[in-house]
Length: 134
Image (cartoon, rainbow, N blue to C red):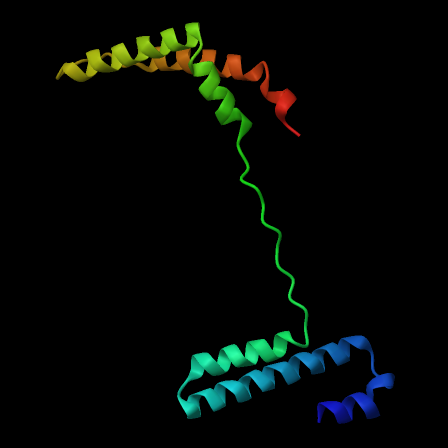
């Protein structure tokens, strides 16, 4: 049926119609393979055979493997966290957390220390971050 269509009507029909008929033919063929697989009982093997048969007609394109992308901001944050003033602010924040955690009832929070640390960390990172972005 498909060959009859291509040889008798093919030159007169637009490409969109040919593509739609090819897709319909492939769907019908897949349905036939699935039906035969159900009859035989080994559906997985027949499905794999159908895929292998179809792949012989149509090329398979696979995506290229991407290298792992490293976030430059995370790398710079790790480097800046080790520097003198930033690490001192981190220790101040940790001491505040320990002090607040050791008390059962306190109104003290460590928000100010946290904001000071994050501000200094972001300031350090911003010096070199934009030169590393593409």
